[in-house]
Image (cartoon, rainbow, N blue to C red; front, side):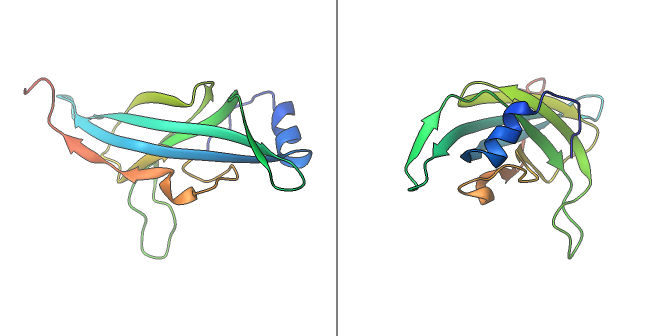
Length: 139
């Protein structure tokens, strides 16, 4: 997991004072092989944040959070995660965004909040298997 230093005061409030729920999902995940053998990864992600009251009524609130994106290898049998190829905590303020990064090896999966650190409505859609696309240099 990523562990850069950040101001976590808002996170403590979200986790311990409020009922905070996220809806993070990866809409598309592609990899393009570069001439140098590395891979450019492109993620289209959607992130929403909700606060719930004591009766369970949810209200969407503006997103202004540090959320990880990452890419990892196929896990070995019996393991949940494979080797992490990339992990970065990003300050996200819009519900839809495209994130790009480069890795040395072709990942099996990539996505937003890949290690499920946030309470998420549907955690199974946070990551996607990568689709290998033809190089734009070859087109």
